[in-house]
Length: 125
Image (cartoon, rainbow, N blue to C red):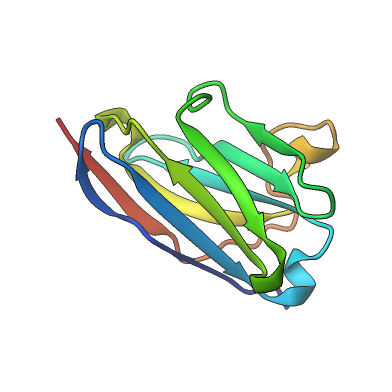
């Protein structure tokens, strides 16, 4: 059973930073492509960043390159999303997902269909 728990969201002003965490059950984490998606009100869910936990290769969407960084802590079965230089357009609910196809040459699609409960990020101007 896939278990994902996001945390770390909050409200910041433009230019600020936040770090999100996604704690996964062990069977959900090892040698998988873990990723972050976000969904703003009235918009489709979009992929933000992904990491292959088996080797550490990372992927970032063009919209966040240079500002967001995904990383991992294998001892904690946790994936992080460091978000710097936040802008109002980054406001969204952020979700963690497993088996993101982008790690395998595919698109930003969460193959397992499992999602955490999400954590809200709000950036004010």
